[in-house]
Image (cartoon, rainbow, N blue to C red; front, side, top):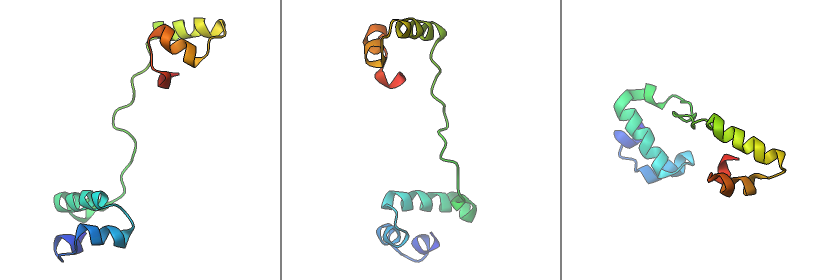
Length: 86
């Protein structure tokens, strides 16, 4: 990133050189300016906030519907939840 910050290489040219997007190069440049070389070390890509857990009463309701052989697409509208929460 030194070549972008100090050498005048464009972010687009650096992106081609490193086979990444210009947005990625922009993030690297920001981290390099803020933290120096240490800012370029690998970082965890784990989300910083975990999704909230399903409330116990909602789990009980889903279990009751599953015992009646209801499946996810049937449970969701019945309980007013997203299909993604299956």
